[in-house]
View (spheres, rainbow, N blue to C red):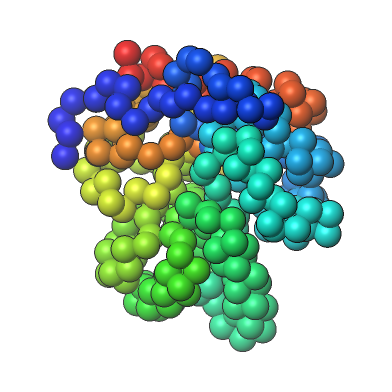
Length: 313
């Protein structure tokens, strides 16, 4: 494990613009997570459609011009826009704009049974098919948000099955611990990953979820880097707005450096663990949903790039 925060190794690149010229300055590898640049849409379980009003081609082009090297696709949104842009065309758009890191979200119910599992298995096949066609780096997955209990051994065996399916699609599965979910902390998630033994898997470490789960950022230094699939940046107030965890998470996340979390300490902890991949920008907020596409790209990329620059010296 790296004992000291490294410098800018693996954090800079030069990318082509949407018109074929190149950006002649180093810029960090940052993924524009789906909801970060999706505009006025919310998760389905709170009444949203999860379909962005912003055109898919425009999102790719504006994100690339704004400095992002990666982009996230939501499953419902991608399903909608595939009626206009077939997968081969999306691949071309991504390549032409220098977007080389793709993530797709989210697989739910991979651990359930009955009708929920049947529906989940069918949808998972669709998502993994998209991942294979687009060459996705990873597909996000999470556990139950209802408070239902699932045995650890059951989670391990079902996770191994999901990873085997993902391996056939040539992609990785990123398990995202969330404080309201069955798997709440990175330690709980790491236990499932290790016991399942599938190495096309890793943790998605989101600063908001890690903090709200009460996990000190320094504990992340002990996670073996091969078990970290991705890292997501953001910020927040120390306590949830109005004491409501879900409301805070969906409406009041802040741009890195504008809240009360130790964003620098978080970045340095994952770098000290040995992580060298891209960093995602994931901001759920009322303010961010009201931004135009250009405003969202500029605000989110600038904040993430500044946070990475500060953390790496």
